[in-house]
Image (cartoon, rainbow, N blue to C red; front, side, top):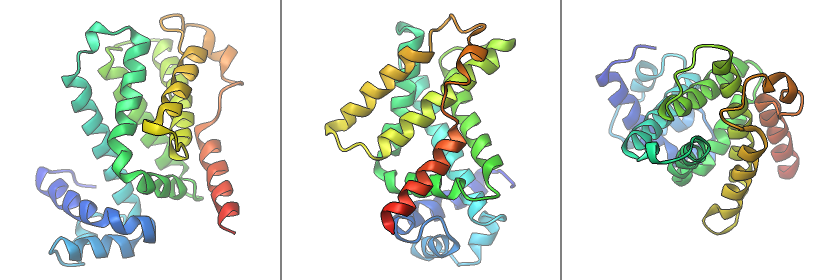
Length: 221
C-alpha cells in the first residue's frame, strides 16, 4: 500500500466518515463506501485509498492509532516515571485515545480473528507494543528485545479485551487490571531469562481474539 501524505489524507477522510457506520456494518466495503460518500468523495476513491479493501483500511486505522499514541507519549514526561509506570501510562493512553470508537475496535478484533487474518493481527499487535517500548526508552537489541515485546503483547491484549467490556466508572477496573498484569509479568528490568518460565502461562493474543469472537457470537445467538 502506497504511503504518501496525500494518500494518507484521503484514507483518513474516508475512515473518519466511515467509523460511525462500522458500528452497524462492521469493517466492510459497505461501511467504507458510505464513508467516502459522506466525506464528499467518489465511491471509487475507496479502491484507490485501500487497494486491498477492508484489510488495508483496518491496517491504516491501526497504524494511525499507533502514531497518535506515540505523539502523545513523546509529549508526556515519561523520564520522570519508573519503567513499569511508563508502560502502564502508554497502554492507558492507547486505550483512552480509542475510547470514542470502542465499538469499532471491537469490530476490528472480530475481523482480525477471521481465518486468513492472523498475520495482519500479529503484525498490528507487534507494531503497537514495539511503539510503546520505543517511546518508553527501550533500545535493546539482544534477547531482551523479544522478551519485552512478547510479555507486553500478552499484557496489552488481555487489557484490551478487558477494557472492551468494562462498564466501571472511567474504566477504573481496567486500569486496576492493567496494574495487576504488569505486576505479574513486567518485572522490568528483571526480564532476562523469564520468557521461557512465563510464556506457557501467558495468554496468546490470537487465542484471546478467537475466544472473544466465539463468545460474542454465542451472546448474539
